[in-house]
Image 1 (cartoon, rainbow, N blue to C red):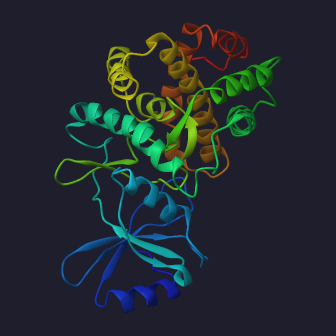
Image 2 (tube, rainbow, N blue to C red):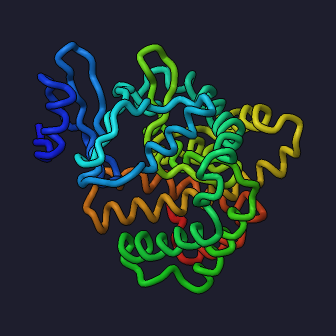
Amino acid sequence: MSRLRPELASALDILYPGSRHETLAGDASTRRFPRLFLAGGETRMVMDYGAPFEGETDDVRLARVFESAALPVARVIDVLPSAGALVEEDLGDETLESAPARAELYPRAVELASNIAARGTEALSGSDRAHGPALDQEKFRFEMSFFVEHYVGRFLGRPDGGDGLREALQDLADAAASHPRVLCHRDYHSRNIMVRADGTLAMVDIQDARWGPDTYDLASLLRDAYVDMTEDDVGRLFETYRSRLLGPTDAAALRTRFDVTSAQRMVKALGTFGYQVAVLGRERYRSAIPRTVERLARLLPASTQTQPLASVMSRAGLLAR
């Protein structure tokens, strides 16, 4: 059991005398997440930022937006600026990825994604973050450059991806950025969707939520690097999203946007995995790379908008399975 920072330990002792803690395994972020066991038997989660902060954090601001749209997230119980932490509701340990009934829960996760895009968009539009950050052309182009630097360069050990790669990736970024915008969780995958004891779903890791393409969260969920899913399942769940979000709309146009966003999301994920393994030495991300490459190798040639990128990446040997 790792020790809490002294200022955080002192603040928690005052708020919750007699409590003890256990620190959970971290993710790709720099934050730590001790679980508090209170003297009365209840539990809380602590989000430790590692240093004091002033004002509201994005976690607090965005929790308010999600809650105003009746979207399930961990309730913020105490804000401790001088101790650099939040105390939140404990959602438990079972994620969508680890749930025994995962296949049965996926339609509900898709329904939740459609609610983020519908109710969440309305809530964000009326909030103080209505003009906040977006997954836009600049952001997507940065992510494509990050892929070249950290996946192609550092992970694969190659100086670049060959002629035309950067240009093709920028075209992909620009295409994704042109889609209609909704509220996006931004990292909506099976490890960030919790399954409560009563079987309901709730989201964590919401601090990067922002405007983005209308199929971004769906792409994050259905092209999740941590879960195997058949194309038949993807198609069925895509239709669930389409019918709930937009009703009778142009399914072909939405599917094209979904495929473009999926490609951008997976290329971005490879950049992240490459950085985590090659730069930070976090080997647990290595196993997600082959699955992501295999999916890109199938997806890119199948869509007219991504075929040029498929040709460039194939010539460079970046789609080898």
